Length: 184
Image (spheres, rainbow, N blue to C red):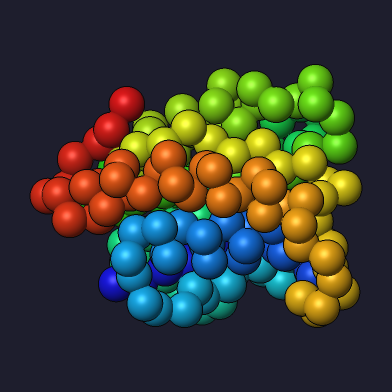
């Protein structure tokens, strides 16, 4: 099984990436998978996303997303939704481009007022692209995420992710072994 973490933060090495990797670790464990997650940081591809083609790096990232069994799609919350960087990348996928992929939408938020944004904005976009999204999206408080290389205190993030993973486990396992279908 292939797991990919797609990060739509314009800054590399962000809290969004750290939080998304933590989500992937919990999801992989909950689903009974053993493979490491591949990280795709769109910040490195930003200058090429609007170029005609797409250029090889962008094409490889699109292919990786489409070939994933489990795709964690993460963005910081900008103006109460996901970033334009993530939207530009996802717009390069064809209709149904994520068919057969199980996706977990994640938004990192600075304010609890943005808690619903992940299910109101990002989840429907992934469904529109054909992904199965068997769980609710995750709204992660930015203050719970450390970016110090993994040596910091993760207890606040674990408090959010452990109950989510326990609830999501049967849904993720069922989606990952089901034939291609979209979960609404």
